Image 1 (spheres, rainbow, N blue to C red):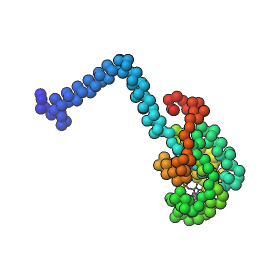
Image 2: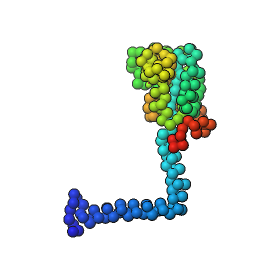
Image 3: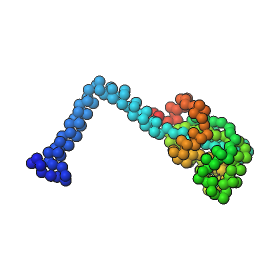
Image 4: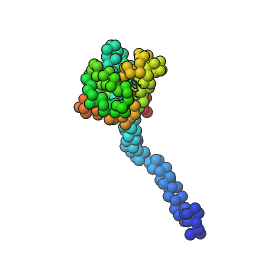
Length: 210
Ligand code: IDP
Ligand code: MG
């Protein structure tokens, strides 16, 4: 039989493959019945898997509370919506934006006819820059802000509840995990960002989500 071909493999090769998988499965079952090994799996492997998963899902995202919100006295209202959602504030500061940082931040819009007006609007007063942290925070924060045109934004969102304008839409939020990494680094120095355990972490997330 050795040498018979089944789809490129000989019978002998198929047997080695099946035997290897089967014996690995048996070893696995055997190991799990040994208390010492089980404990080790629980103490070492599970926390490792958990930390690994946590590091993938825990995200930081950039928020700018724009000049229209500052002028309208909505800074507290907007910040409190993020806090109430359960997002953690990893960084927060007031800053005056100039054309250099705006050109980098809005690089996808610099050739648009409305860009000079956007530049003027975004530098009319200082803004509040915030770095928010949470599991899958980038998408959660975008949803909370609503679509770009405030008139079309869903009720319950920040833009939907508080705005009527396309340009003056109160808040900026990073639109992807990649741009969040770039934007947080653009607006914050590493020593301006803080990691701390929140007193409410255990009730904001379930055990298996943290
Ligand atoms: P986003 O803020 O929802 O991500 P973007 O398309 O990235 O939307 O645009 C950045 C900002 O530029 C918007 O938040 C808004 O302030 C402004 N903007 C976008 N499109 C227009 C427009 O057609 N007219 C005026 N301002 C605009
Ligand atoms: Mg955008």
